[in-house]
Image (cartoon, rainbow, N blue to C red; front, side):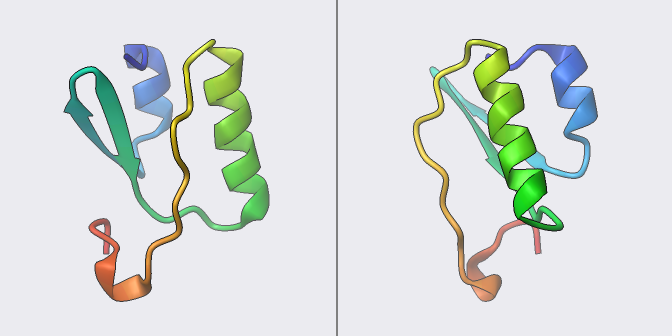
Length: 62
């Protein structure tokens, strides 16, 4: 589970808790933002299962 203070930083993403997983959806501005998010997840000791780029019309965050 992602700590509340980190969730506050991710306010531009949609967060869905599907125990035991937390799923993040949204648009990130560039590749460095993706790397930064992955680094933050790793730094928290969380297990990253998958990163996926969705076609624009399938993106739930719009």
